[in-house]
Length: 130
Image (cartoon, rainbow, N blue to C red):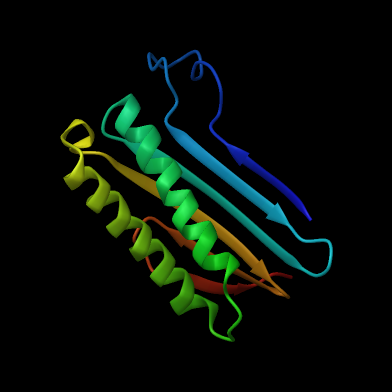
């Protein structure tokens, strides 16, 4: 199994004035079967709040999707994205310095011969991966 995760280091691209990139990235590829999980979350709400929100979003979605053992991945992905959103809101409410934080999310999840994709709070879809 290969796994990569983390925040992109350093400064953003030359055309931006952001000094901190508040994004989190996760990628997993299993060697035992056709399973790939890739997530990109981009935080909003200031550099500190954005970092917290994007990492929390990735952590929640990875935990929930990693525990999947069923036959219907679309509702499971939908629940994972919804739970991540709720966790970010809860943490922001509990910590006034994180008020207004949030995160976008893009998820690509390959199970067998199908690609499931979810963006933000959009509806996940299953697409044949041929």
